[in-house]
Amino acid sequence: MRHFLVTGGAGFIGSNFIHYLLKKYSEIEIINLDKLTYAGNLDNLKDIENEARYRFVKGDICDTKIVEPLVKACDVVVNFAAESHVDRSIGRPDDFIQTDVFGTFVLLEASRKYGIEKFIQISTDEVYGSTLGESFKESDPLMPSSPYSASKAGADRLAYSYFVTYNLPVIVTRCSNNFGPYQYPEKLIPLFVTNAIENKKLPIYGDGKNVRDWIFVEDHCSAIDTVMQKGENGEVYNIGAGNEKNNLEITDYILKKLGKSGDLMLFVDDRLGHDRRYSLNWDKTKKLGWKPFMSFEEAMDKTIDWYLENRWWWEKLKSGDYLEFYKKHYKLDDQ
Ligand code: NAD
Ligand code: DAU
Image (cartoon, helix red, strand yellow):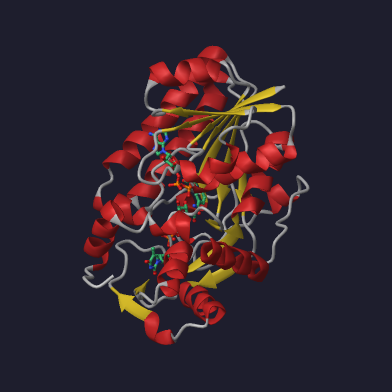
């Protein structure tokens, strides 16, 4: 029996990862530690709330008293918990520094104190910054350009330092842009899909030519699993899918699939410090025997269908505080 502590498991990728593990492995137990910020949502885990191999604990990864007994009871820590939205980090970086850096430190310290088999730090491709040339390799320098990515870079290197200094079995993953079910509707794809369904405008930053490499969330989950089994301690693994698209291409795909008019497109002010292009070389992860399973089109269709079929999940999220943030951010009154 292997005992996992998954932090941030009520968020988008964490909840998909818990589903993935429970489906694939029978001899496991998972504790999900999540603070339930605006982005944490127990609806993401409704179907497994009575599952014997799964337990939810509400709490903050910055709180040593909560973290220590949970780490003590576990073999593997997978740290997804983070403030994750770049736009929010521009408006108010405080929570990003606290959770993404200090919270990771608390988890690492507890892991050092009690000993664990593996510590997986979920980092991001944003730590490299933008590139108009070659795709980034794991050995390239980090040049993060938003408070979000800088806080993630801090956590990424802090985790590595615990391997070098204390021999903690740490592995760091840096994945590209995820999409799929249960993604909070503030990120590009779920925001544009749900807005288009509701005939609301799709706010495109700047000229819409910024490029991201899009990966289906289940492919990210299977990559983490591979890295956990076959990766080497102290190493970083890039995870990408080879689906580099600009935001206009993504918008166009969504509008066509939903049969909506281009009139829904609305060009708005650019994001401050907006990275032009992310691009990863993930040969090192490929060498472990992993590759993405879903094509971009299959994954997009599956995702769009999911949002069409699960209005109960996102409609209630797009009200209250969300609406306030959204209106202020886009300077819109009618959305
Ligand atoms: P998310 O915002 O959907 O989920 C984050 C979760 O962390 C939420 O459930 C939230 O409640 C929880 N959380 C926040 N602060 C916490 C704290 N102090 N203590 C405990 N829980 C806390 O984010 P996501 O998109 O699922 O991303 C998960 C991780 O993957 C993050 O570390 C992010 O940096 C990384 N990542 C995301 C992407 C992407 O495209 N979404 C790509 C690469 C890496
Ligand atoms: O690359 C991995 C990262 O991907 C993760 O580490 C982050 O947690 C995740 O949020 C994501 O960051 P991005 O900033 O790339 O994702 P976002 O969905 O916010 O934006 C994607 C692109 O779409 C980006 O160029 C900005 C643009 N955009 C976004 C929104 C929300 C718009 O044009 N309009 C929008 O309303």
